[in-house]
Length: 104
Image: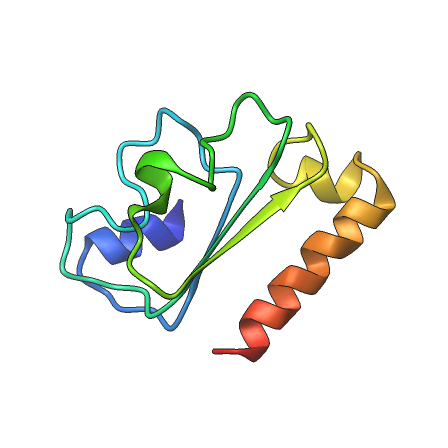
């Protein structure tokens, strides 16, 4: 949420990784709340995470391109993906983050 706060305050970022963003979050990537912008975004969530907004559609995907969407085969939420989920899914998430960062 600190990154979203920074963007809402007009600060720019080279990239934003949004993991398991909640459906009740008021500001999401692409909202016009501030003048700050992330040049690229990665939106990731577990496919079976009922607490996360769907990164594959709706309000969460209004982020301007380029936006990378990662839908993981898990029901874990947020950093629980790394600690309690299937190690293969955690590795997939880590790889997606590293690939995203390498492209910035």
